[in-house]
Structure formats: C-alpha cells, structure tokens
Length: 222
Image (cartoon, rainbow, N blue to C red):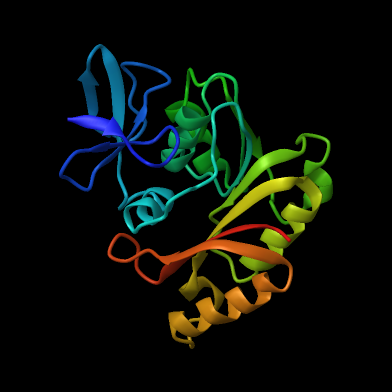
C-alpha cells in the first residue's frame, strides 16, 4: 500500500523502506525503476542505493524543502536518476536546471528524461558561474552532487550567484573525492564547520548503508 510520506510530494510503502514519486510521464521509466499503479495513479520507485536524496530521506530526514512549482538548480545531474525524481516532485509548474560538465552523461540525461518538459539540460562546468548566469534564473533550491576536491567551493559560489534569499541548498559530500588520506568523519566535520560560518544547517545525515563515505547537508541563509 503506497501512502503519502511526511516529505512533500514523496510517497512510501507501508511497512517497507521504499520510496516513490508520482510519475510525471506515465508509462516511461528512467533507469529501470519499478512502476506501480494504485487507484489509477502511477508511481515510480525511488532507489536509495542509486540516489543520495532518497538515502537521506530513508535515514530520517524530515524535510528536503522541495515543493511543487519550485525552480531548482541541480549541479551534477549525471544521467538523470535523481534529476527525474526532482522533476516528479516539482511537477509541471516547476523547473529543473540540470547542469553537468560531461557530454556523455548529458546525452544520457536528454535521452532518459525525454518528455519531461520541466527539465532544462545544460552542458556546462558548475564552477564557472559567470557562464551560467545567462542561462539560469534565481532558484528556490540548489541541489549539488559533484564528486570533486573543491565541491564545497563550487557549492558556495552557486549559492551566492543563484539562490533566492529564502531558498535552501543541499549538498552531497563524497569524502574520498576531497581527501583520500583523511577519515570521512573528519572531512564531514571540517565541511560542517565551514558551512556553519555562513549558513544555518537545517539537517545533516550520513548516507550509509545506501552510499559509502557520503553525507548530506541541507542549508539555508542565516
């Protein structure tokens, strides 16, 4: 039995750790996810082992601050797994600017998310915010999943350039991409200390068992 979860526009299966979103493009899959029909409504299963945003929800996050009709800047959109569920959440009245630097995965995203008119694919380097300014408006939410050493710097630059004053920013931290010589917990602590200087950290979770050596921060302006 699929029912509404505590997270807006996210659904869960009663008695099981399974998440779903309403399928914006009924009958179409993005990554071989299960499609489930209930009361003539089609849901897409949201795999937490393939999506860090789903992982933080299953690890107890109470609010990811994504709403219907939101405008979202997704940095590191890859081939569209999580991007497509964000697309489901914001719905037809919302918009997802999906940015990635890799031509191969951008091609896959365009193919996988065909028919999703609320996704705007952008082949660009998220580190070059000046180049993005002509193509992106101010947004309600920034979501970043970029496995680079300077991922926090990229996050801060994009918040400064594109996030509305009352918006929220979510970052997935991959410890091994920052420094393979340090324990992940130490890296997470250092990132937290840096973010706390400028933002209120609304939520913080590590992502095991779904994602190894990863954590996620949800931030808002002070």
